[in-house]
Length: 260
Image 1 (cartoon, one colour):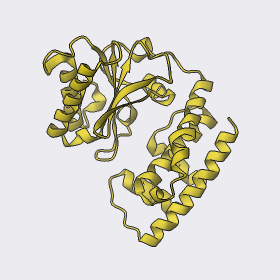
Image 2 (cartoon, helix red, strand yellow; image 1 turned 90 degrees about the vertical axis):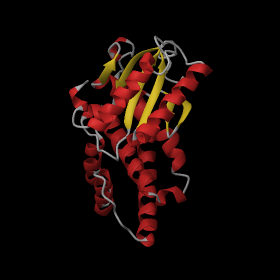
Image 3 (cartoon, helix red, strand yellow; image 1 turned 120 degrees about the horizontal axis):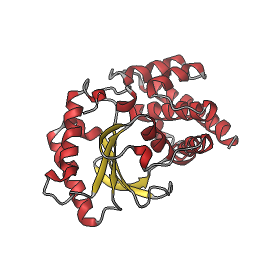
Image 4 (cartoon, one colour; image 1 turned 30 degrees about the vertical axis):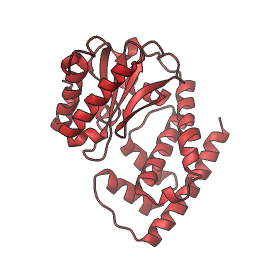
């Protein structure tokens, strides 16, 4: 097992359990269908925070999983959910080798306790190519095409132009900590990619927030929650924070996307 998993023994056990199930340990039905398993994101970059970070898995499939295989994948993740508390943070994209060259193709993905389809984004591809944890299978560089600087920047713009631009239309959700934290982090990481052509961690993104005009008290709250701390604020403070962050992100998205 990759040494980067050693500081997180419970997560390492979860990854090993997923590995065993996908390798056919459940009943042999998946044997040979899954040809690789990888972990990217914060675990690979060394920025993982227990109880806060997601576990970003990618499984390489021979082809798009048929209904019977999807049922097996669902059963595996549901079983892991009963065995590991941390399994709720495990997301895994089941990437079809046949369609992997099409960045718009929606691959089956387990996240938020369900199996659904979404594209394997350029940013996700770049993170997996950077320095992945290879549980088994060929190196991602052997089946993922390298991204040009222009493609990487376009991937970052797409992160802002899609889901997060739509989220800014919904006033009420910005009262929630998760939207404040994720929205600002996505913006800061995208801005670094578009401006400097680099991928940065969430911890680096928090540092970038303060340097680019996010109010100090908002940055402090994001940073503290990133370490697992509970941050108490009043309803009045929460409403004010929502308005400030939403307007800040509106202005920043407009600035960034205008340069597309």
